[in-house]
Image (cartoon, rainbow, N blue to C red):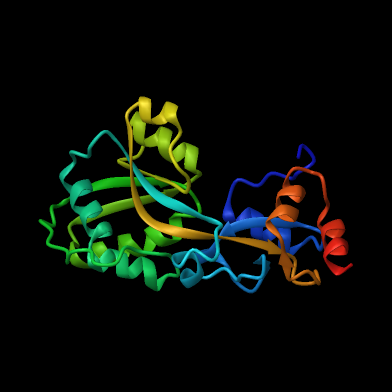
Length: 226
């Protein structure tokens, strides 16, 4: 709906919803805290387990993005760490859905510096991965720049970032331009409202109606209470 207030960062959404009793938004499940309240969708609560078993259907990929296949030695080694058993276990510990059965990390640990930038949703997980990798490779300097998914892709393509971050699938035009995505982890999407809002559950149909402007959150609540 054109009436929506647009926020382009996770913190922006959380702050807006926390300060407006009639607001509704969506954020990364891993970023959820007590400042806002997550709704159940059709009676199913968002969690790593419900996303993994498919009962909670609102989920998206956390992608790392490169311009073609990566060639920078440090970037290759860091990506290998992210996709290793150690990196995927860290993703799971942080509340995301990592890959089971990944191989143990066997890196070359080269010296150098790279820049990783993009999605504010992916950024908290990436920060933990950078910390984990740099503990193994103190000769590596990895700068993290938090922007948004589109900037993460364009930055990877134009060389601003060695590795981009995107909390969505790549567009056809981005793939045609040379962007290559690797799924770092899956992320549940938490639909959040103000803590003072009495709503606790919403159907997918009502959620869709709210986001297309057919319903306000108050009208959706009234329908569900009838």
